Length: 125
Image (cartoon, rainbow, N blue to C red; front, side, top):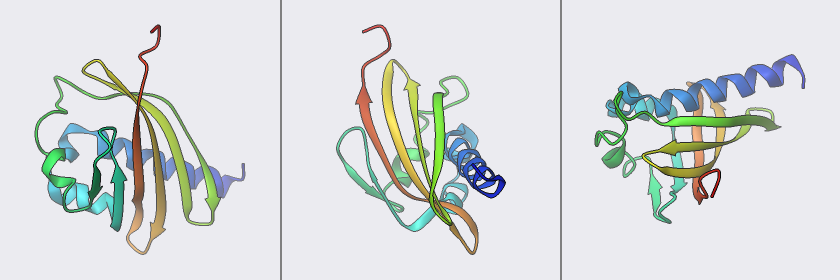
């Protein structure tokens, strides 16, 4: 991977981890800074979300310093200039989810364009 691609992947990883931070999730303004205006998500529940509707759950307190999201196996690849695909697992309150995100570089920085969560078996099951 080139240095430029490594920097792009790291920028997307840093932004993804910010979105999982309880302090960021509690602030609609901070969440919107990281979501593309055309953002869509297919959640682990099967529900479709957009940038406006996702704000109803990001600040609901389900992710807190007392109940953080554990992230494992995060990796990324550059699909095209300015487009990064990330995959990883989250574990939160006994629920394991395989996650996939597309990040794109905009005039205002890296923003999440698409996200999907798929329920996964807890390791050892």
